[in-house]
Image (cartoon, rainbow, N blue to C red):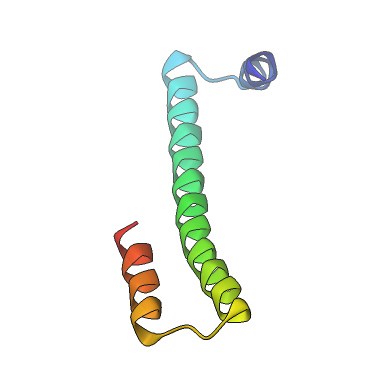
Length: 74
């Protein structure tokens, strides 16, 4: 992967400052993507947990609230 990134970066006619800006922007975008993925997983996971419990048996309002609070704190 590193070699591929280095090859792609070498194709740009930027000076070192321009390349650093490109790499900084790419790293920021990757971090943002990762953060969104984590949030999506937390939300989807809490919904999946609720669906599995509801499918197995009746879920009390207290259990629903506990699942919601856990997801909110995560």
